[in-house]
Amino acid sequence: SQKIEQNSEALNIQEGKTATLTCNYTNYSPAYLQWYRQDPGRGPVFLLLIRENEKEKRKERLKVTFDTTLKQSLFHITASQPADSATYLCALAPGSGNTGKLIFGQGTTLQVKP
Amino acid sequence: ETGVTQSPTHLIKTRGQQVTLRCSSQSGHNTVSWYQQALGQGPQFIFQYYREEENGRGNFPPRFSGLQFPNYSSELDVNALELDDSALYLCASSLRRQGGTGELFFGEGSRLTVL
Image (cartoon, rainbow over the protein chains, first blue to last red):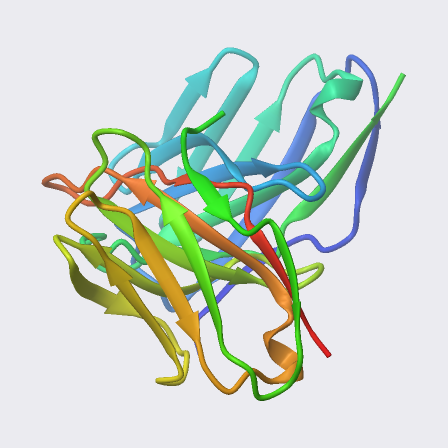
């Protein structure tokens, strides 16, 4: 069956360290993969999109990798800050990506301690 | 802020009732998607509207229906409400172009509680 999985356990790290979140998927060949941030009671906010032919994407302190052989994406936040504490969702677009359907993982909650 | 507005923000209904949720998309966006998010879970795709027509549907029964208007705003209707319909309903607008829909811009959601 098709699955997209994120670590359901919360990730607790110290301020200044690098946070690494994992997204694994099975039985999909996604056109692209996206990462979103969601704060409690709020809608998700888009962070980064990486296409199937891209290995890595960066934006300020954020970095995303995409390994279509391993069927895995890693999301890194360098020099983490308490303000980075939130739930991070990965989402993939199955097939050509033209239907607009995104399949979301269940999210990983990141807690950055000062 | 994304420019996507949803109403109402919170509502309580009883089992068997009907509900209509509304969404105004971000200026310049031609596509609206609806997602259901249960507590502690990721959003689940309900359906998407492009040029006023349904363009993709998730695994939701027909009692979940929708509309998109010429100004690209949208409604989600749910009939015969069940307890399991209690969730945060998220609307997301986007600009459909070649290569896919790209990133979604979500509203803050409508929190539905069914008693």
